[in-house]
Length: 265
Image (cartoon, rainbow, N blue to C red; front, top):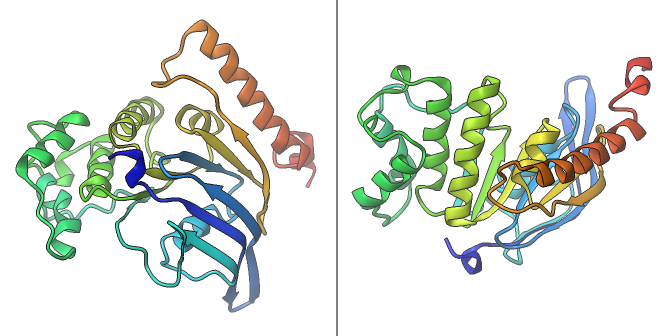
């Protein structure tokens, strides 16, 4: 996808309060953030700080309690069209083959036709050629998540939202799927918001890393990542990567999420 087809996303003093049996829960507090079309932005923060809530609000799946969200300059007041969403769990339908799972968003859309050539290209890009007619139970966890990534991209979305899509994978599989994810993104360069708990992962994938505080979350800092793509390590890149990693860790230590202050609470 060409960058000019991508959409911008803007959060203006957005807050979210959930009502629960035991009372109100302030999840997000006055978050302001602008994401340019074609940008890959990682959102990192402690558990329960509202990262997933930001994605759901951007997609129009839940409403903000305060503030405004704009996608491509339009206020988000209902579910946004042409959005790809990848969750931590692959959420594949066990009774459908890989190919049939990929076609699910197409079947749910209106007047959309996807060529077999397009499907085959996506499957080939993530190393799943030959598995088109297999069922999810016949695939490894990493393969299942690759299918979920392809399914989110099958309709050429203007906006890709990913909520810890690699969190359930083992370390080696996670690294391999991350490579596949960057390759897919470089091929299509759609605007992407990527939620993670992993500092290294946030740096390796993103153009910018948004560092969030604990709940109710605020943006503590936005870190620009100036590393060449694809993110293959060399001695020089490792040095720069370490600088970003230390900087983000220092932010978390300063607010008491990491280090001695975190243990003392």
